[in-house]
Length: 107
Image (cartoon, rainbow, N blue to C red):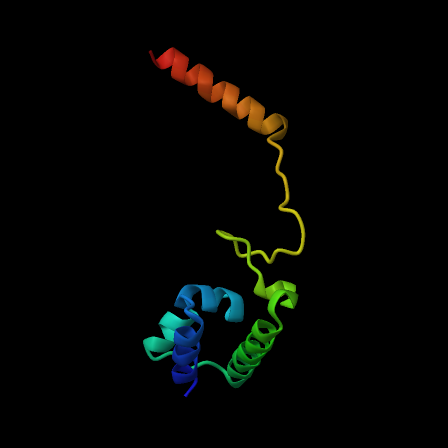
């Protein structure tokens, strides 16, 4: 059964279930759902098993781990480059000004 293999993997690598789900299946509830009786499709199971074997192989290589195994803390994005920057633009500036005026008029 897949859940037994995953549980052993989680213990061996000291990895939280939600992190495993995000990295392996792009679903943080994946392991939790398996624990509750969810049965994955054959393709999902094969992909998950392949991900685990690739992870173990990358862990033995050390720093040369593939990008998809290095997650940015607090993010679902892999660390393939610098984090994108977001600009408020004119809409955000006008919204902030209007909110400031509304708050000022309330008092």
